[in-house]
Length: 342
Image (tube, rainbow, N blue to C red; front, side):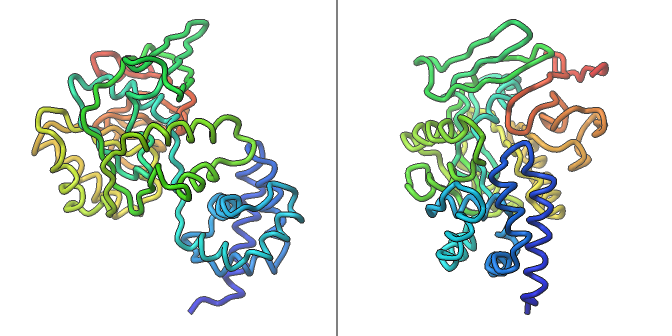
């Protein structure tokens, strides 16, 4: 049985750390709210009623905004939370951090461009599937003073992704002929509550993100992917998903940003299962991970000098990237050989 006082103290400590180390420079409002929770035992006790795996500050704050909390200074927000405590506890207890940022496609696209022919795209940790539509978005890649524009064949998309690039990455639209995703709790791009939740996960002050996500949700809702509920670290779940992919396409399994949220044992089991797919059919693994997360990079990368997350194909480091897609510093030759100078 959980000690209520210990749980309250843990909430206060976690929110103090968030206010001190994570929110500053990104969201002054979230820093204000988190600092207030850390200093208010009554509010911390309310949030301690939420299961520990569901009480992260960005998740709780998103849930309150989804339910109508005013985006105002801490005293106003705190009063709202006290008045809606049961509702917030219930909603946060069933929600998860499922940030679904289509901007990531801007750094996934160069890796997808290394795969010839039609692609069957399968994403692990797909949320609502917004990263399953790289061929439906427009791209504006900036390299020095130059601009490389990519649009879908039928014209410019409502979702326009800007990205700074160096190192001459391959840039071309992928030919996606099948798309599917696996998630513990998939979200529905057409469901009003799920849409509101996803846009609420955008931190206050992050200009343009909510609008971009909303436009991407419209694209997905108009032609929904196949989204399967399940634990992809279970090989049976992964194989069931793969079974639907067309035989004439190269299967591309993507794990953009999900692996840090999977416990190590399950993560290693998932990566072993993905690697084994290559022995059964044409399959490629593309991922975006912190450089020190696992030991699958060949050649190894130095986390201290890499300069970002790692965009990789089948364990080969291709580029140093922003995890949310703002930049890509390409470090591989077009032949696929790693640039040793990078």
